[in-house]
Length: 171
Image 1 (cartoon, rainbow, N blue to C red):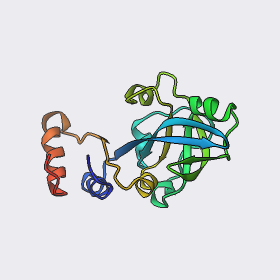
Image 2 (cartoon, rainbow, N blue to C red):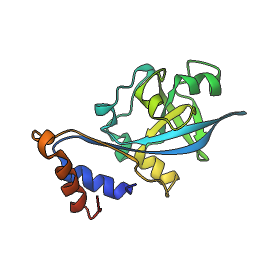
Image 3 (cartoon, helix red, strand yellow):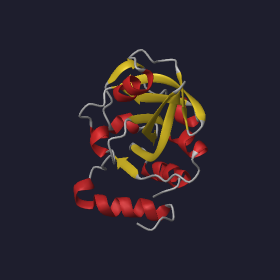
């Protein structure tokens, strides 16, 4: 996997086209006495450019959430039900990695690509990737999504290798 710094450099090298990246870590979500094992997915600001998230309540991350290392979270409907025993959870605080996060939205995870990509059946929580690295310094970027350049069909693989080499990461 890539470090956060490498992913940020790769984003600059790939500009002006969008590039999204994510890191995932297992953790325990806590709300009052309730505890739930979840998969926390730290996502970059371009994540929703590539992944459709159907919000059931609240809002998605603001553009500055990643830059400001905001302690905000989007929780899946499964997390809302299993942890809070309620649907109206926006504004409540959950603990992830021993740190408080404010729930800003609830998303539908039923049959989503996010659910399909999950390593196990753990419910999902989305947080800014910068915040994930703040609370889990050993995390690694495991997923990169990038928009194809105009000649991507013919030369996409070499373009990606060139961008990775430019940040001193052997493809």
